[in-house]
Image (cartoon, rainbow, N blue to C red; front, side, top):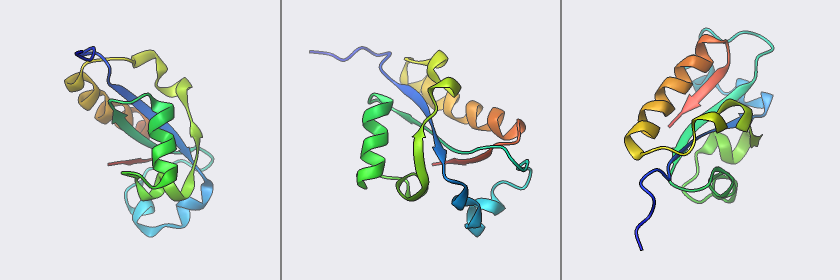
Length: 109
């Protein structure tokens, strides 16, 4: 059985404000606007809920999501999903850039 070629997703995880105490995160977000959320932007071939659970369980996890991940933010990504692999790769970058331009603190793999 072949998977649907459009089974990839971009997703956004809201991070706890404590992530701002991480110097590496701050260095990567010089244009962060006070009061805006902190987020992680990723892409996956899994359902975003399953991928978030894997992050939190430490399975192929990003350390910021594992330690600071609060919840998925489908309001920031659901409109784009699902899509083909290459489109998801590009959308992950574009979405991260767009959120940074809005003042979010963003981390991407």
